[in-house]
Length: 400
Image 1 (cartoon, rainbow, N blue to C red):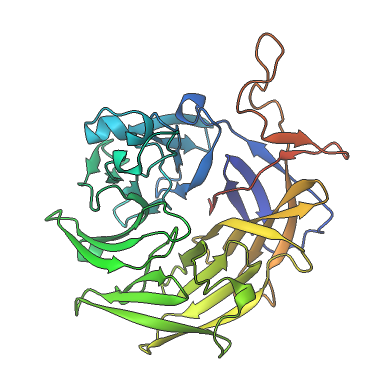
Image 2 (tube, one colour):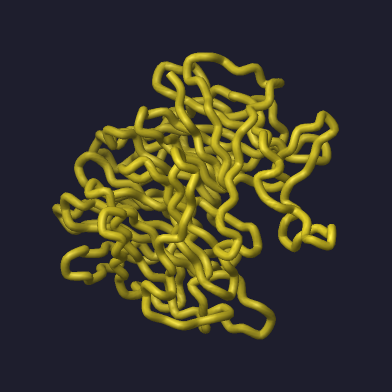
């Protein structure tokens, strides 16, 4: 069995789920350039998902300008912007007031609609954070080409996560104040019909993802290792503790940092298992969502890159096959290697399929007509072995 894995910035990799790929063997992937005017500084985030139509939907970042939702058709390799955030919201803005990022984990509803949201960019010197009005939840329908925009839920907060529960007419949001060292993140319930919000409170967890289990209960991380569970049938938010293999999370796991730590979350296709990868933790965890206990019981499934001295994982997903995929960045001497790692039920530990290299280094122009390097095109390098690869951390992955 093979699966096509998409990693931001847009690289497609064919990986075999049945064969062990030697760690020393590089995976050569095909790169596709996102329209440069939608990401003029060459940045991308978690915002990549495959729609029910087989096309990919990618959020972009144009700091101080705007953001766009881009559609990519793998079969034809055609790409186009389908949503202009400012145009959809009916606004004109620039600088820190702009809706500069689609930084959310995009999600797909049962209807096939694409759920995403906007977030603040970076202020320049002298710009107050209060200049940013707040982020918008948006829903794009690929069938009609129309976009529904909901009001700003929390003033001056961007939105980092949106997860739909269409059978119940709800969507769940996590806001982002972008404050440091502590972020403010309100857990919000959106009634899709009435367009009204219910604020469940500030759970203070930076860059929070939300999942909805088979019973319709929504989960949001809490700073310090707690997990919020909201049940729409009772209207109550429970604050759960967590254990890993029967014990509280260790400091090294980064699952319970006092100041918060970005943690990747995604859920199994049957919505009974939550998978988790802390950004700097180098391990995959699984939680049983079927129980009603006040403690969420988890287990460590293994290290993503055994013996790695340092790693960074900001890209994790669970594909339609139930396979967990992660793009893990490892520092090796003076460069970074981006490994494609997978785990599926029955595996004794996560599988490292090898580091990813770009097979088509001419996929875009890196120099202008004057022969000088183009601005913001310095994110790639040629290694001593001749492989062409990215310098920085990969930020998104999905199974197609």
